[in-house]
Amino acid sequence: MTKDPARETYLNFLARAEQAFRPYAPIDLPDFFAGRSEHIRRLESEIRAPGRQVAIYGERGVGKTSLARLAYFFVQRDEDQTHFVRCERSSTFDTIFRDVLASAGVDVVLNGVESEGERQGNLGFGGTLGFGGTRRMRQSYRRIVAEQQITPRLLLDQFAGTEGLIIIDEFDRVEDAPTHTRMAELLKQFSDADSRTKIMLVGVAETLTQLIGEHESLGRSLAQLRLDRMSIDELTDVVRKGELHTGATVKGAVRDRIVRLADGFPYFVHLICRHAAHAAARQLLAGASPDVTIGEDEYATGLQDALQNAEHTLSEQYGRATITTRKPSEKFTLVLWGMALSDEREIQVKDIARNMALFVGDEPKPASFSWNLGELASDKRAHTLTKVREGYYKFSNPLMRPFIRSLMELENIAYPDRQWEFPFMASAG
Image (spheres, one colour):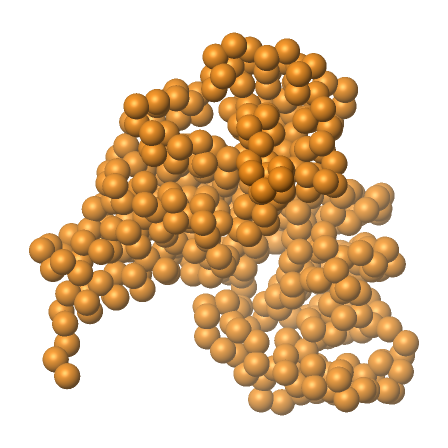
């Protein structure tokens, strides 16, 4: 069967685009990691400091897991001595560290009892994915018998002398209160023992207390790395790295629009660029030129596809917030769009009214939509908004603002005769 050169070129381009733009999975190769230079320097410094463990926290979608997964590279630790565990709501201290120990080739039997399910789970863990995407297989396990629970002493005995990393991701999901207490105790004991293996906690939180609880003893032993939203320059770097790897050219005005729509979240840059690159790849099937350009048309198609394939919780929540009796409610939509126009995270009701005037002409009185605000903060409307205090609201999910802004931008593209002037796109080409 004769190969089609144009199709081969097309498929090779798509493969490169999937490596460069990863909205659905963390970055796992250093070449594709962009920005966060100050956080990387801080991470290097804290990992070297005797007795310091690290907590990385911030809003959803700012790249915490990508930074954590590549921490071994940035701080020059052995990848084989790096143990990565993702938490679930049902996770407990023992289940978390049973997985950590299994990653290190240690099979723990608590109380001298091992169930069939536990045995299968531990054996299955031996085939975990390595950080570079390769499969790491544990050829053998060392079996140890513990008492009723996994203790800090047991973990220190296994890891203190090894220069490794233990990364506990999505720790904010853990609902078991004793696990938070035991984790704080472990962090302190690893610090007091000056363990060469360092522990890194990662999770969605606004403060360290939200992530792990109030533990005064952690003041000196736990370094705090808060990841805020990325700057325009950092997000632009994400696009440029993607251009270099794929060989595509993103027109300057398009690059600017993508970066500004993202609202500081690398997730949205990766999402829009991925789908715009897929739209642009169709140029290769025509076989006219090996060059790929992402211009206005590819951007428009990519933006529409990106919104259709965005994190499902966003579209689901937006639908619950705006649809009434199977039709979108104009008032609920206008309130959310008025919220999305503001650059403030906590938005005053009078500012929402002023922003709504862009779409309806006259500025509505706050009393005319106060009921809608209350509904949007209720379970009936999926708690899309949170009432911060009297007269102030915010999006419960910070990714909702760039999602709605992208919907507004798509509306502008669909109706070019209207062309609303959005402040957040003001300096876009």
